[in-house]
Image 1: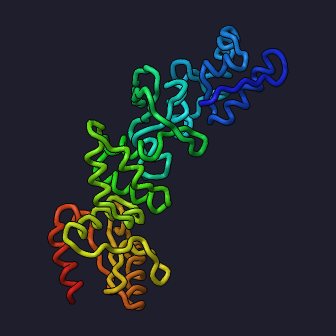
Image 2: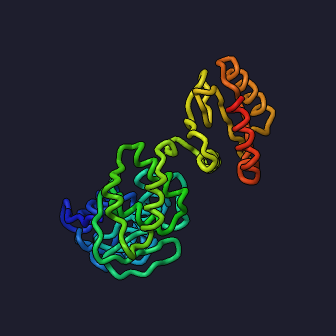
Image 3: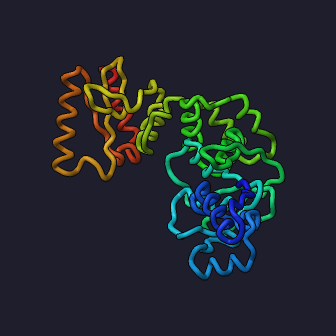
Amino acid sequence: MKVAHEVGTSGTEGAKFAVARLAQRQWGRVSWAQLCGVGVSRATLTRWTAEGYLHRVLPRVYAVGHAAQSHEAALVEALLFAGPGAMLSHATAALWLGLLDDRPRVIHVTTPRHCRSRPGIRVHPRRKCRRIWHKNLPTTTLPQTFLDLSATASLRTVRRALAKADYARLLDVRAVEAACGLGRPGSARLRTALREHQPRLARTKSQNEVRFFELCEVAGLPAPESNVYIAGWEVDAVWHDLRIAVEIDGPGNHRSPAQVRRDRRKDLALRTSGYMPVRYSDEQLADHGDEVIADLRRLRSG
């Protein structure tokens, strides 16, 4: 994070004004180094903490005014804790860059400093690592993010992240390939993900949809289009050439009377538009994939 050097007016009130402006840009968080940078003494820090103006949330990291938590505030806390030059990395960077949907259990940061991890924050020391800025926070570059993600996440997750980057026109395949190298963790999985890259994965919205896509892929079936609208209804997967529309029912959906009525209206609208509605459950995809593929082959040949 950048250290501000503005005081505004003289004395404690000037320092408080500078701290408030700094905190406004950092989701309510400041570091001890930043406080020093705007002229806050240790005695003032002690007094402000006693008065409840500052709240210690991590070693040498403070919340200003109140300690209410948010995802963004937690990210800033981790960056300030890791010190100058720190950046979001691994799955945390991928999430912040819009390449993942699910928030990782811990916050990953990379820093050129020696800094120990702590509960909820995984610190990765790296002497040299270039960073970029996205939505006012520093992250590893896209190629480095993909490499780090590949070292810690599943192939499914990496492939979908690549697809989302491609869909957003952010993917530079050559740059990602150049990030791979002998002895670099994640290189083998990232190369595999690049070989199996499928841009249409970016349109999937759930793990069940990804699982269905992968079933079709393994079976050699053409990739369906995901989450497209037909007759005003969003459909999970579609083969327009064969007029087959697939709906995937998750564990918490399609069970109440209202949901059942809605599904029937949707199926009728699809049939009226010339599409054959087909439904599979998450349990069928997970445990009876062969039967799902056999059913699809029959419908496609039919």
